[in-house]
Length: 131
Image (cartoon, rainbow, N blue to C red):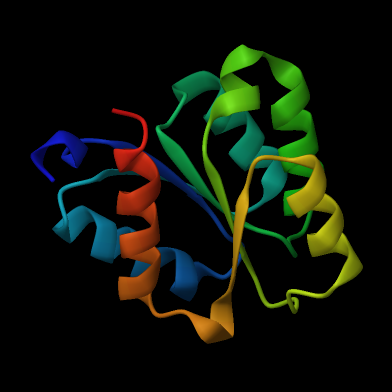
C-alpha cells in the first residue's frame, strides 16, 4: 500500500457533504485530494492537474458526469486512460449507465449500495493495477 500513498484523487460531486466525507476519508488514508462541485470545474481541474484517479458523480449542475467523462476521454491520451469511478444514485440498469459502461473504460458504483470504506477499497484496487 505504500505505493499508493500520495496518489492524487479528484472527487467531483455537487453534494458538498458527500464530497467532504470522501475527501476526509482519503486524506486520512494518505491520499492527496482535489475537489470540484460540478463537471465543468472538474474537467478543468482534471486536465490541468492530471490526478491518478477520478471519482465522478453523474447527476450534477453545469455539466453532468457523463458529459464530463466523454469530453475527458476525447481530450488527449491522458484523458483517455485515467481511471474513473462513477458514483451515482442511478440504478445499474439505467440506460445512461449501460451506455457509458460499454463505451468508456470506467467503473460505476451505486451510492446507496456502497460505503465510503468500499469506495476506498475500489480506489486502492484500481490504482494498484497501474504498477
